Length: 129
Image (cartoon, rainbow, N blue to C red; front, side, top):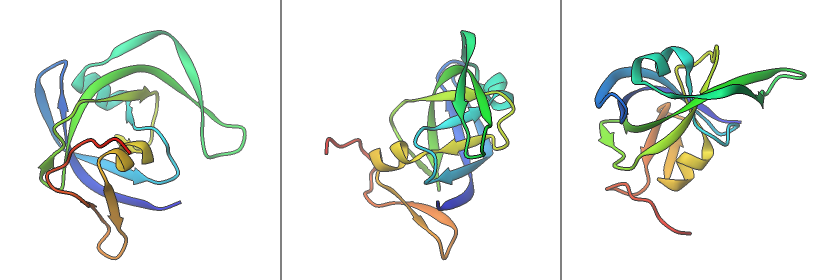
């Protein structure tokens, strides 16, 4: 599992504004992309009728997905011009966790020496593989 932490900007399609300089963890151990309930309160989200359990990378531990939010990310100064649906997790330790499905879709690679993500293709675009 590889992890890189950087600041990103999160654009809320619900509130139509940016949350700038948000801590994000790019995590190859996570398939999906998540935001914390604290960040979700700022950017807006659609709650589920009841929380849904989600397994965590700790034995016998589960988190609670409480809703979803449509957002766009600005990574290393580059706006990814596509909306993504992120899951909102109660008490998530990181404000943002970027998972491998998002990284693969936009060809985001992790430079471990510099501790930064970078776009393999610029401008970013979704591709059918």
